[in-house]
Image (tube, rainbow, N blue to C red; front, side):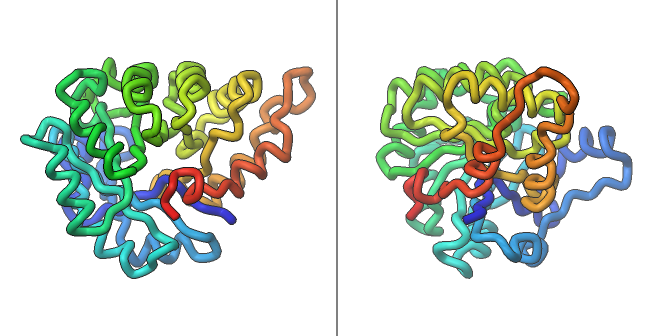
Length: 279
C-alpha cells in the first residue's frame, strides 16, 4: 500500500486573499494555485488512495468548500477520503461539522490555526473537538509555520495540541509536516499521546530539517507514528517518495546516523486508513 494522507484540491477562487498574495510574493507574480479534481485523479494513478482536505480559512483566503471535496471523493469510495473543514471562529462550529459529515459523508476534520487565526487551546474551541471525538473523526492539523504574514504563528506550535489530546484521549489527531520548524516539539507531543500521529508532507524540500526530524523520531522511538503524505499540489507522492529515499544523501561520508531503509519503507507503505479508523 502507498496511501497519501495529505492532499488538497483548489478550484477557481479557493486559494486567494492574503494567502495568494503571499504565494505570489514567494513564488512569482504569475502564481495561480489550481488543483482540480481531474488533476488530482491523474496525480494519484498508481497509488492506493488519499485523504483530500477541504479548508475553511476566511481569515487568510483559504476557502475550499466541504461540498467541493465531497463531490469528488464520493466517486471513489474506499480509496478517497474527504476531510471537512470548519472555521472555529464561526457561530456553532460543532453543529456545522456535524452537518458537513451527515450531509456530505466526510470522515475527518482539517484545522489550521495559522490560516484560520484561532488559538487551539482556548476553552471555547473544545466543543468542536468534542464533536469530532463523538463522531469518531480524526483531525488533521496544520500546526506549523507558513509564509502568510496575516497568520497567527504563536497559535501554531505543536505543544498547543497537548491539552486537547489529554482531554480527548480517544481522539485521533495528525500533525502535518511534522510541525515544521518545531519538529522536535512535534515528536515529543506525538510520543506522549497515544492517539496522535504526524506526517512528512512538504518536508522533502528542506533536506536538513527533514533529516533531523527523522533522527529525532528515531531517538524517541516513534517512527511507527509517522504517516506518508505529499501536500499535493505543492508536491506529488512520487516526488515525496523520491526525496524520502534520498534522505541519507546529505550525510554521506560523515559519521552522522543514517535513517534505516526499513524505516523509510515502512512509512511509505503505512496503512493510514486503518490507523485513523477510516475503514
